Length: 99
Image (tube, rainbow, N blue to C red):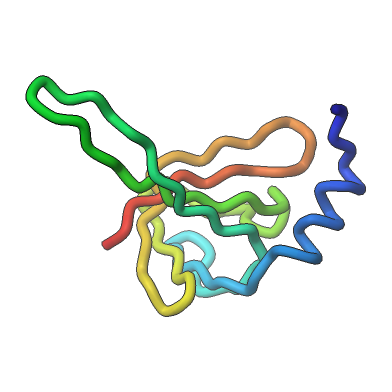
């Protein structure tokens, strides 16, 4: 299945939520994104365990100036941006770590 930019915008409109960011570079701002916090099973030496993988999918221009290490607040919870991954189509995925 091919995903178009307009389909992604529709998903953001339908499933996105308002969140805020705090950056030394750009100050405080709000943007809309889709928040996911799924679990990933990891095989350990003595037992398996689950890790959470919080992330946001958003429009790249909405977070212009956001840097790794900046903070994002979602549903009243504080997260730090760990990795910023623009996909080259105008969308970016932010990998987060809960603070």
